[in-house]
Length: 508
Image 1 (cartoon, one colour):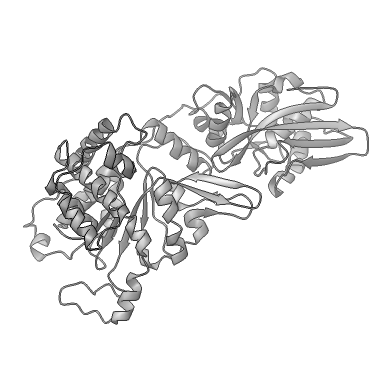
Image 2: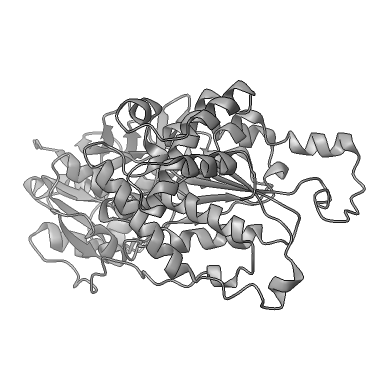
C-alpha cells in the first residue's frame, strides 16, 4: 500500500461467482468545492455507498472531507457489486483525514455494510470472499461481529469483529475488536429427515436408490402418482456419506452467497427441490449484470430433485445437459463471465402420462395415445441418456400394506452399505482425481480398470440400438457400483446384467 498527502488505500474483495479478487479502495482529497465521486465500475448499491458512508462517519463523530473526494476501486475494469465495500471506503476516507494512519490499513480485508448511524450490518459472501483473499495471501480481516463464526472457518486468517464504525477505528488502531461468540465448526450430522423405513415395499426401487447413492449416479423414477417416488428421492440424502471438510467448505462458500451468515460447516449433503414452475434463471442461475447461482449450484455436492420433471420447461431441462457432464455452469454476461460449481446428483420423478394412470393395473387412463407420447417426449433423449439409472416404481401390493412384506430397512443400515461401497471406490481410485464411479471418464474405465465379465449382453444391447456410446460407459460405471455393494473386486456377468436392467428401466 502506498500513501502520500491526501491519498489513502484500503482493501476489500470483489466476487464474480465464486471467484474472488482483492480490490484496492483508493481515497483522494484535493482542492475544490465539496463533492464525492466514485469510479471503478460500481453498481447502483455501491454507488450509493458514498451517501451511507458519509452519514455513518458523521454519526460516529468524525469529519467528512470538505473538499473534492475521489474514490477509486482498482482494478477499474472489474465490475463491482454489493454493499460490503462500505467499511473499506469509510476507513480509506478516515485515513485521508488523519483519523487513521495510512499504514494501519495495510494488508487488512474490510467487509461490512454501514448504516446511517454507523452500525455495521452483515453482508453476503463473507466466507467466499475471505477464502479467495486467503488464497491470494491475505492474513487479516475485519467483519461484522455477527459473521465471525463464518469468517473464522477460513484457516490461517486472523479475523476481528466490529459492531460500529467506532469499533472499526479502534481495531485499526491496534484494538482486538468485539469479543467473538463461541466458534462452531461443524453442523448437525443427525439432522432429521425421511427414513427409508417409511417406504413400504418398493423393493426394486429401494435397491435402485441404494445403487444410485453408492456410486453417485443420476436416477429417474417412473411411476403413477402417490406410489412413493417423492419419498424415495427425499430419503436419498439420508443414505449419502457425510461431506468431507473440503466439500463442506465448498458448499458453505456457495450458500454464503445467498445467506447473510453461515453458522457452521454443513455435514449432510444439500437437497434442492425447485418447483416445476421454476424459471431458467432460478434453476441454472442468472441475472442482468452479475449472474447469481441457481438451484443446480445450491445442490452442489448433494441432490437436485426435479419432481414432476416433464412439467418443467423444455428450455430449463435442456440447460442441464452441460452441467450434468462438466460439474459446473458458466454464465456469460456482457460485462463478465461467471462460473459456479454444480456437481450435483440428479433425481427425476415422472408420471407415465398427464393423468398418471397409464401404467397402473386395470388402468382407468383416459389420455389419448398422442397425449401420452407427447408427455413422454418432454424428457428428451439427450437428457435421459445422461441419467445412469431408470427404474419403474410399481404400485404396492395389499400384502405389503398389511405387513406381510417384512420390516423395511432403516436408512442407517443402507447408509452403512453405501459407505462401504464408497470406501472401495475411493481405494480403487486413490491415484486419480475422482472418488466415485459416476465421475470416472470412459477412457479410464476401458483402459485402466479390469473389463467387467459378461459384456456380451452390453454388445447385444448396442447392436439392437438400445445403448449409445455414453450408455455403455454408464452401464460399466453402474456395474462397478453393484460390484462394490457386493464386495467384489471385479464386476461379474450378474453385476453387468443388473446394471443393464437398471439402465433400461427394467425390474429385477
